[in-house]
Length: 113
Image (cartoon, rainbow, N blue to C red; front, side, top):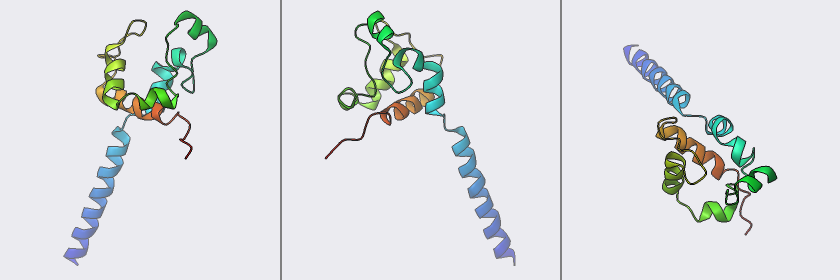
């Protein structure tokens, strides 16, 4: 009977640990909406007004744009900002920035074979 109790306790502990890990994973979509959408658009394509204001603003849902950049370079760009982009270092954690990169990598249309 004791072995069964230990097994149940271990299973319960593992389930709680997995739930806590999931709860702590930043929501890339929510963070993107809060921090990026105003300039880069809801689906990673800036509005014509933003393109007129910032000539070189990237279309971050463009597969060619994403393919040409590593996750580390995208994290660095978001963290450090650029000519027309404010830096998010100190405003967002590295984990939050990584979650944003994962989210907008998913905005690109799937590659066709």
